[in-house]
Image (cartoon, rainbow, N blue to C red; front, side):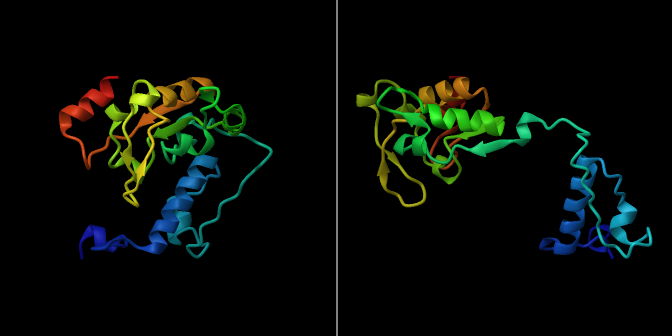
Amino acid sequence: MSEIRRHGIGRHGIGRRHFLYGAAAVAAGVMGTGCTPDDLTGSSGRGGVPVVAVDAQRQSFAVSPFMTGVNGAKWYDDAYGMWDPKHNRPAPGIVGKIKKAGIGMIRYPGGTSSNLFNWKGAIGPQADRTRQVEAQEGAPVDSRFGPDEYMAFMREVGATPEIMAPFAGSPPDEIADWWRI
């Protein structure tokens, strides 16, 4: 039996039980609970049941701001309220909520919606911007919340930007240009 199969990773990936054991081990390690691999495999005498204990009174580690990121969701419709088009600025209410939540990174232009995103059509004066193709439904959408608005929003909330490359519809040189701006 191969080493991979012996540890519960079949040809279709890791098994549910081993995935949960791994997740518990990561959580335990991050929280400083002292949970060991023996605790997860049954060698400790606890029957292989992961135990995670949380001491809410003690902070034993600092959370990286890169672990507190969110998906910017959509660039169209003013990024679902992240942008105030009337005043051409980040929406103050959203900015306050993101700061309060401690969000450290925001992905742009989103998840699936980034696949067909044409960044060059989303820069410059609003009147000159092109309509985009929304990746999930294929509907034409606006480009009001472009790279410039996104970066203004990032400066306002103090988060780190994470740019998604639109590999589905862009040649490599265009993606390289996207990273340079």
